[in-house]
Length: 500
Image 1: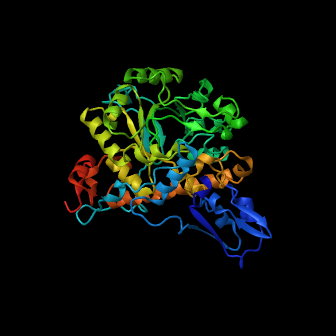
Image 2 (image 1 turned 90 degrees about the vertical axis):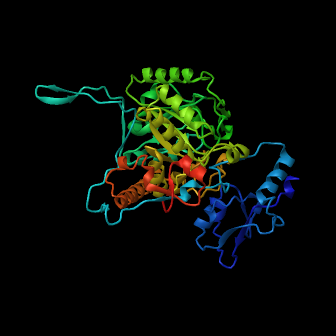
Image 3 (image 1 turned 45 degrees about the vertical axis):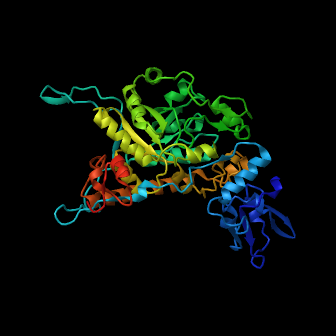
């Protein structure tokens, strides 16, 4: 039956142009090509990662969607029918990588940003200073000062704060799901940009120890790689409760990706599957969460903020309120467009809610309860450009996290096959012949360029709004307008319709 599943893509080779250099054979991580007098593609193995297209010196290769897969049907899509055939032949659960790609409504694209005209002058960011600096961490309810020896001094103990030069950080992506070279690139770029990278739940490779001031280390349900040394080499410690791509379930790193270095970093046997339980087995209430938060604060001498990462789900506002009251300094909310190295397709595609609605709901709830200052909000899950960053902050986020965008900057073509470990671009793989393809210096520079470009654009947006600091945009939903949204959607987002 499996052999009856038609190829999703077709490899079209212009044999008049092909000079038989075999670069396509060498570059394909999925074994699509063989050579017998000429290059011969196996269409069924192609995932359209586009590596062969990029490296063909004669531009002789084109990857197209197979037009002859099935008779068109507006209800039974090609993907649905192929998935049914796969499961009918395997009896297994379908896995996928990256974020939800289903055509649900994208609320960022239904929000428009205000601009100054005539009576409220705009600011030229090329001529006047613009401030993007953001501090993550608990803020005091009030500040007291005292005078000593004629000098005014702060008399309030401020909780640990993390300074970001721009309100963007790199999302959690574990070592194991992505290569060490990708982790190195993220760490180097975070340091250069004055932001943070997040280890995900895969531990911290010792080669990244020099970057500890720009690293968030994660404590997830599997506790992979967690020890005192791990906590000490971080700027922030994060408890991972949920992930936008797979809310309510644990993680799974296939044993093929657990080589010697990954096993040492995660502190698990080489070649074994790394399975994270769905829940933390010591957290079944907000009180349990509070115990872990304060255990981590004790372990880090109350010198580092503790973040709690959750997936955006239906009652996210109430959950966030409980997390804030449990003592977290940062709440990281991951929307249903958030990426993953591997997740069951049915979970990724059908569970969770959009990050835009989650930000607004959480910001509203925390403000209503008078505890918004007690936590910073980091929003993630589908941030594609600086416009999304500005809208997320206007909705109420303090900063955003980018994962897929960062991977694309490093060469990823979003073929969504991260879970196979065959990434031709050397990012989501541990195969040595593939990982060496990603130059961490080049990739770091790509990431630096991306963050700097978005920061420059953020300054332009602030200037158009007549603002000179990103702080002034935070939660300022009056500067947003909705278009093509229902009254209920507008009410949840807390914005007016365009024209009002």
